[in-house]
Image (cartoon, rainbow, N blue to C red; front, side, top):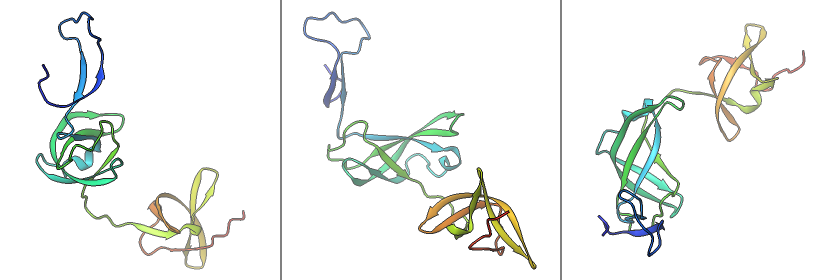
Amino acid sequence: TSPMDGIITERRVEAGDLAAPGQVLVSIYDPLRMRLECAVPVRLVNNLPLGKEVDVILDRPATAFKGQVAEIVSEVDASTRTQKVKVRLQATAGDILPGTFGRLWIEDEAAETIYVPASAVYKVGQLEMAQVVQGNRVIRRLVKTGAVKENQVEVISGLDDGDKILVNPVKGE
């Protein structure tokens, strides 16, 4: 007798096999009680209190769902600096399969960023450079880039607000 109604996904024994106490006989899931488990960066976990309603997007079916934060695992993964968050999906209608890939949307504070034309950043070996105009001189400066949007690239470090840069840098030595 199963402790819940559901669909059998795996049968590990056949009729007539001997079973031992504690042995897994079948795996089942309840399609009406699905959840998303995801690794959330530690810096964002405080934005997900228990019971908070969140937006979830799944690949199959390609649909957005509402979910509710049901559990935050207290262990932090030291290598990825993440914590596992379990979100109970609402109104699933039984059309989600176990293992489906999904994304959890987390609200975060807006951050000021600097975007420059992609042509302004170039590589010298593995280093990313930009050329900054200071007075009547041009100085090469190391930069670190992030997201790319259309023909713009985010500069995470190396430039300050108000710096004047060459959009088409001189790349010769």
